[in-house]
Length: 431
Image (cartoon, rainbow, N blue to C red; front, side, top):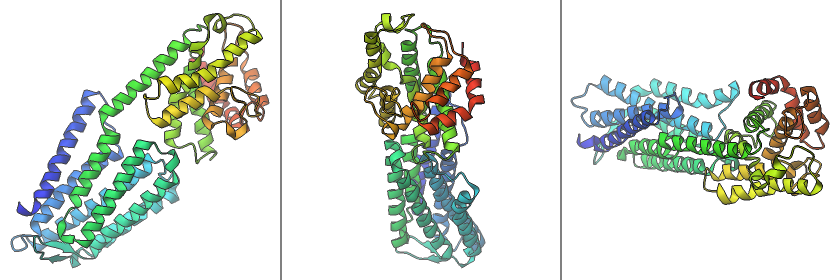
């Protein structure tokens, strides 16, 4: 026990994290799904157990059969490799750089497979060295673990900095901590192999990821935030009883457009998983500024006067202000910025003749350009207090004619090409 106190302490911590994780999932009625974190948690516990066992056996070479010792070391080194590998996949997943193509996945998996082959092939040459405090193992199998840690650290760094501008701030902190901890633990273990501190690194990874990203309580809080946003958006929408499910439909249209742009490889440097997620959550807030529009104007059954229309147009500018002043502490910084851009700029036009600032082309944030298409289509395809709904053919024709004038031509084209999906949403959520 003297030689594996550190590992036992780490194991107790990991088991406690696992207990809390399962309890929180049950408390918040979250369905357990197989995720990279689940894999990491199980592998982490396994690795620490094997680390403790091998720390004991390597110091009792006179009583532990050599074959058993080699088997246990094989399992330990394999589990350590697996933890490093899964950590890299986790980083790729949360930074939205996990390869979508088969060739890319092969490149990611190849070092892990190669390392496992080398590890097993050379486990027979493993040497047990007597240290001043504890014995430890060295050999090609151990060196390949160090090599793999370096390779996957480089993979993680490349993925991280490639998408730096599109990774949420709190995720940046988690990834930076992971990379720093991996580098420090690997470096110390290489220079001072007698320290046997790999379990500290694994435990640190698991705790950091759990507290910052995977805590079910945080996920539940995020769900409450989304429900609060939707409730507020519905409250605004219900001031005009002719709009029906406008926010639901426009959110679905936005999601469909973003998916189609991704499929076409357009704006791939912007449309990351986090960006699309925030866009879908921000879409319901696009008309929040209408809370400042008087009912007499908002619900007027006829055409607005120039003065009334000028008042109506203020809802875009006022919406941005409301987001900044009221919702800045709800949700992440990235989400709040996108909600602001969607609310303020969704009436800007590609040709620069929109409002409130007269931005043109790519001066308009991408999220607002996507929102503009979804908003206009829904506005003309549904009944309003001042007119009946237009036929769908005419609605799609409005988007086609507005391409390159009112709308980003690439977004308009993508929208027109997914017409069957748009019509399905219109049919299911329309009045």
